[in-house]
Image (tube, rainbow, N blue to C red; front, top):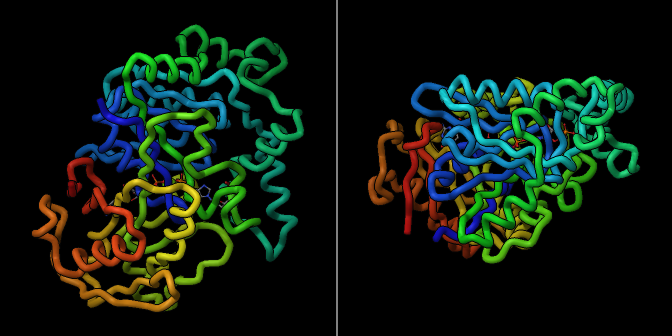
Length: 370
Ligand code: GDP
Ligand code: IMO
Ligand code: MG
């Protein structure tokens, strides 16, 4: 039996969690997302077909039972469209359980998000304007509207759509279903949204999102549980806030942005680009006790003469580039020396094994290490 696993982003989001969850989902019976809402954008690429998910866990694209847990928030109309998009793209109506306790993002939440951002002037957080913060604020104020409340509320703008979702059997109790699966020996892949540096408690407050982005965000105790941290070979950040390894050279950051398609999946905004900072990974490990790492986007660095990494102690080190396409490589020993040295440095600095190396956006573009 596969041990249940939680996948989290270790940096500022967009590390490639969608791709890694897509790859891993084949080994699990079900897949569940536990935090955030449509501020997240997770991309799965099957062949040339790119599927962008904002609410559903990425394993849904692989036909897995997809659950959305109580810590999430959602926009019912957009979620329903997303479910239909998955049905059209994959040719099968997905098996989805949307927890009845999930809070609803309203149009009003989006207006408040935009108004607050505009009132911040030069101190904008750079939110995704999806109403995330105001929705979680209402939830904490105990003034929010949950799915199981709105479904009986004829005044709710989502009343009809929620009735339809109930009719299709899409709304239920994700926690009970997950516990029943685990008790009967099945395994679940939990998918975190955002990145640990955006965590409401541990991130670079106030330039954070409004949910728990680490493994504890699952909100129910799972034992045994493996924790997989997804990290990019460089860093990106979208929105404002400190970014100590941000690259000053436009030529290099533009190159990485274009090659890595570093534009927001949700907003289309260009992502800020920086070198890898291992002190960020160390902080993430301290809180989340990572069992292994999935290193992504190494192929993006292909044409650079050299690339740089900031070590835990603040010193810099450099690795040689290679200059050829590595997306077809499937054996670790066939990777260029620059990547093998990078992996060895990460493992030595953090004492966490790098078990997966992603060499392109497609599902099959991955190297496994035992
Ligand atoms: P997520 O939010 O962590 O799921 O990441 P996003 O989907 O927002 O952004 C990651 C982007 O990188 C997407 O366009 C992916 O298709 C792509 N991607 C994922 N892994 C790799 C990789 O190893 N190499 C390249 N070139 N692209 C990747
Ligand atoms: P995925 O799951 C990258 C950032 C926003 C902003 C801050 C607060 O795709 O990795 P919010 O709208 O949540 O109130 O914005 O958090 N942010 C993300 N950045 N990837 C994400 O999700 C993000 N979700 C939120 O850009 O800086
Ligand atoms: Mg993303």
